[in-house]
Image (tube, rainbow, N blue to C red; front, top):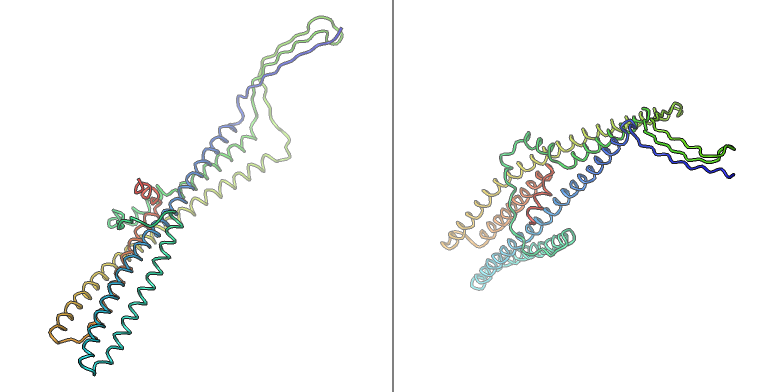
Length: 342
């Protein structure tokens, strides 16, 4: 008689020291950290895009300003040449007029080069032609923003800090999963066996078993304890990283806010300087018509107006860049850019 035996065993884990929930929690936290890291990088990219946008607009406005200055310089030089034709003693002044117009032309050419570079950077970063660019608007609410409010907002919403916290949560989950190895494992077990002609005994030989199995690894060479120790160190490192990132963000926010306030105050001063220079040009032109000023005086005040206008333009865009820098330091520039695109 041929012996036959068939068996089936089913095991259902009941308790594994919370290893599985801890690993799931760690995986979820790690996925969250990766998503937040992507948001943080998007925030940085949005700042680069804002700078590229502002650079094109600034270069275009600077070129328009310098072209206007060149036209006015040529007009004054033409006046000098006409007077020199009548009064040969004024011919030496034509050299001054020519020098001024050549300087104005050089500034225009240099500004055209800067505009071409700014547009190239824009195309490379944005992937589109810099067309239809609207005048920038300063983010609202910065004038009333206090350092404490800025730091608090960054600590609550900056994706880089949230990513560091999520990684700390993942490290906690990995530590808990590792510690679960020190606990016993409990499984429910169902076993059925169908046998015939076993060990020379003819006829059926069946048995069934339902019970619980408790498993514990007593001898692992200390591996489990070392794994737990390593997981604890990783958890501590992740917690330290959270504090480091928080400190970096606080410092970045405070520096950005101070840069914005300084740029804002500087712009106000240069606005007044530009207004004064424009008024001086108007007065000198009126005095020239009345015979109280010569054309060289007009060149002098024209150059002062050009310098004042360029300084105001630089300060205005520096203020805008610093304003967007504050928003980026708080980790909120990517949502602003996304809403602007919509």
